[in-house]
Image (cartoon, rainbow, N blue to C red; front, side, top):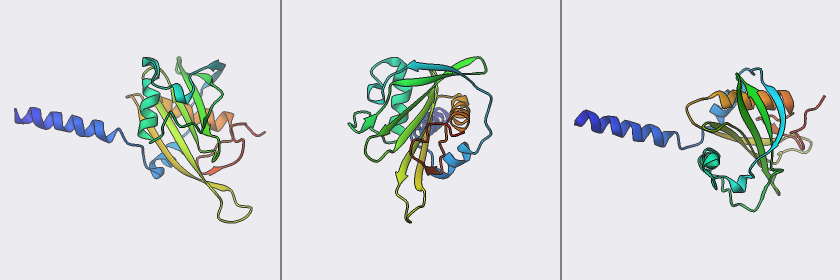
Length: 176
């Protein structure tokens, strides 16, 4: 009986640990992992951030927002409602982006039906004139499959100018 209590207590502890966003340092470690080969299949309509959790398919994304301490009902959210559909290891993933209207903080999410990974960049104004805007980075994941993290990194590094170290206006476009 005592072993069962310890086991259940351990499970509860492990679950609660996974409910919090990773540290900025750990997120940068993730960001610096090598890219994998993905194929961009095109763009598709997807739910806006403020619609997450309204059906069972988007529960994993709602949990990500909770981990990152983001509110889906915040009226500052902006989103096109368009996701990039990508293929990795014969499995489809979706890449979603939304940002705040005024301060441009943004969230990037890669997800499938059961797993999801997100980066949230809080934009920090530069301390010196002419310097780049900084980023306070947080990240979170849901599910047991960490492939969504590799998919998101690969998509961002190969298809955008996004950096997890600094912010640049319109960096969701790829510079040639």
